[in-house]
Image (cartoon, rainbow, N blue to C red):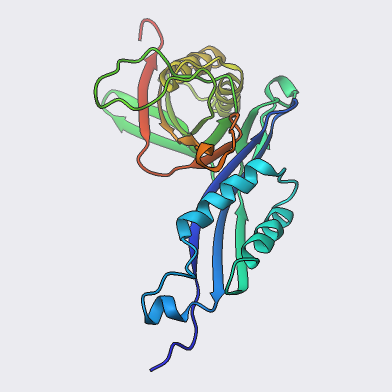
Length: 279
């Protein structure tokens, strides 16, 4: 038997970089795979790891190089990574694949916001109509409205015990995927308000000085109720899509709130209903 081909690497490295040096903030959101081919037969056949660059090192290298270099384009950054890994002993081929996740700048009041973004493409608009002896009830809403702000968000002053490791912060990324459902007052037949309700939600997200996800949810819900007198209440779900600051100190690098890993699981889920007074 002989080993006829091999390749290994690190997949789905989630990298988010914020350029904060000037307004407006610039955001780059990437998912990268690093794959190496080369003279690694002894790793497979003999269990000799002398030439085996750890995949964890690949991940750390991506974050370290993201801190050291501007990411002016995904292609240029991938080229830089390929040149770095290609210089490793035994490597004959490097494959860097990258997916860039698009974000568009929010524009409350028609003015592009310096540090609040929306992710296009996945948003859904929803409707549910129920009827019984009491009449017809119409509810409408939206789902998968993905938004992110690179500052004006913090979380501090929360209880601590021996299991608490989360650090307090006054400046963090706040990212969420909003699900909202609002009920129209019975007999209302003008359903064109969806656009103004959505605008109230996104404008408030962008401009609110957030002390927690709960704090921002309540502000957004109140703005929606103010925007449309014909809705009686709104129920909102805001998952906290965590962006964790990468610890670059072991590599001799600082990280002034620039390089983050976007995590999928686990995540916080914040939910509430805000009802108009008298309803």
